[in-house]
Length: 176
Image 1 (cartoon, one colour):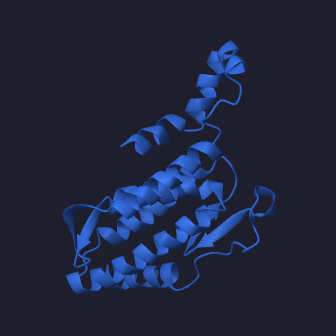
Image 2 (cartoon, helix red, strand yellow; image 1 turned 90 degrees about the vertical axis):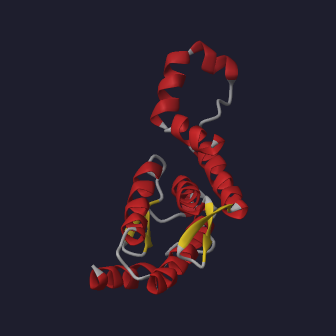
Image 3 (cartoon, one colour; image 1 turned 30 degrees about the horizontal axis):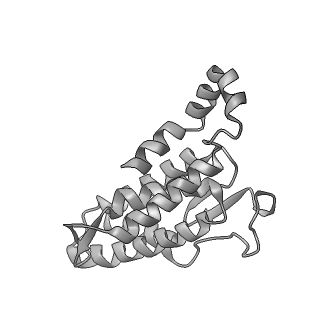
C-alpha cells in the first residue's frame, strides 16, 4: 500500500491543484471540468454529488492507509492544504461547494493532535468554512424558492426539484 499511496499522493498533491483560470467568476467562463490531482471534477450544475463522492473516496483511501504516524502527519498536512485549495476553487465553481463543505465537515470537525490523532476540540475555523460552502451549495443548487406563490401552486414539482437537487441532504449537513 505504501508505494501505491505515494504514487497517488504524488499525482494528487504536487501543485497540480486547479486548472481554473483566475478570471473565471461566472458559470459561462468556467471550463467543463477541473483537474484536481488525478480527479476530473465537473463544473456543471447537477454534478455536485458526483464531485463530492470522487473527492471523498480519494481522501478516505489516504486516511485509512497503514502509514506510520510520522508519514501520516506529512501526508495529512498535504491533504489539509489541498482541501483548503479546493475550498478556494469552490468560491468560483459552484459545483465544488458541496464537496468542499462536506469534506471540511467530515475530516476537520475536530482539531488534530500533532497532525496524527483527532482530539476532543472542535475546529471552529473548519466548521465555519464548511458552513459557508454548504450554504453556497444550497444557493447555487436553487434550494431557495424565488417566488413562494408559484412554488405553493406547484408543490409537487417544487418538492421533487428540492429532492433532485439534493437540498434535503445539504440542509441536514448544514444544520449539524
